[in-house]
Length: 362
Image (cartoon, rainbow, N blue to C red; front, side):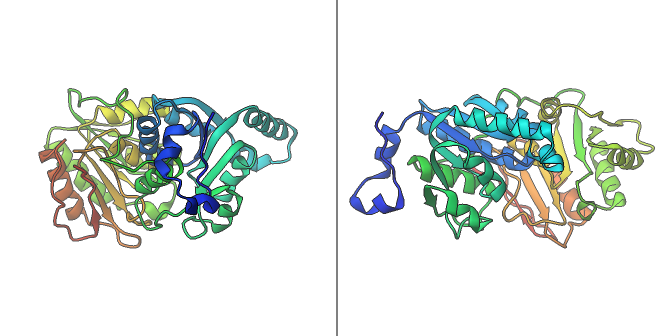
């Protein structure tokens, strides 16, 4: 099997990157374990690889609680689950050591042509070092944790202050020798669908941190507007506290319900059938955009510069607010009107009283 390595010390001898693509072997391992939104942002890179390397066999190491996400993509051959979040609570316990040893044995049993670390953190390096294959990742200036770059065989430069979807696509293209082209394709066609009747909106008012929360009166203003448009409301909640908060928000709204806890696949189907989704900056809000639904994200404790909502071509998204500056209810209501008026069609960025990052690729 003929493989031309584009290691740094070979770049000056006239090997063109496209030769690497044409001659490469098939087996590729993606390392991107968490979190939910980050895995969603990785999906377009998988689509790119499948298109440019049509014979590729792509495996993906992912946190066990998010393993459904890579399994949705038709180009992913095998998902290798890791339980780092669970193991770190009892790292040296007997069961944990056995499970870590089983993971190591599973990784060592596979020979890959490319091991591509799309996480770039020391916790992903712990996995990368157990693999067999040429290890690719970000260079010292591109990685979020620069120390991670020391453990790669081949390092690539990717501009830091770019949306996550673009960074993942660019790194994959650099590692595999092709050029990124076109709007992102999340590979979720099997889940994506048309809005169902009776029409409904999905609301995500909860977050993992209290500093991300948006005022209750602003949520009620948005929900009242959605109900005026004839939309029932389905609220997402992940734990008892979030359920209680969501129930309080819909008091007196007979056409609203808090959905029970369900699998990620079932949540994805709920999102795919919605007329619109409005949510805090969370993985499920990013999933809604990836599914092609008109989606509005509310940012308060994070910046949308690096993680804006992104969907496939023609998807309406609005990423509103900025770290330390939550969007006003007026801002979000304006985006709701635009999303409902232009559902499924690319539109110009709205004029807003808070920073916004609209992603409507053509």
